[in-house]
Each structure stands twice: as structure tokens, then as C-alpha cells.
Length: 49
Image (cartoon, rainbow, N blue to C red; front, side, top):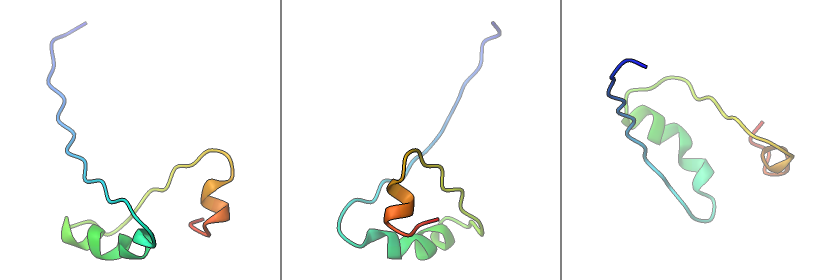
């Protein structure tokens, strides 16, 4: 394996109804799209799909 450096800053937001802040957080960091990856039915139950 070759030597490498991996940098992955992550911003976590926890709490009730925080999914409603997703759009403003994406814009804050200069993004325009979001990838939601889920297993089971948790995203379906919370209507994030």
C-alpha cells in the first residue's frame, strides 16, 4: 500500500427536528446536493427519503 493522507471534516447535528436544518447547513458549507444513505427503514419512517 502506498502512503497517503485522508482528511474528512465532519459536522454533526443532534436533537429534535434537526433534519429541518439540513438545507441551511448544506448551504453554509457551500454545497448544493445531499446524499442520504440509510439502512433499514429509519429514513422512511422519518420521511427523509
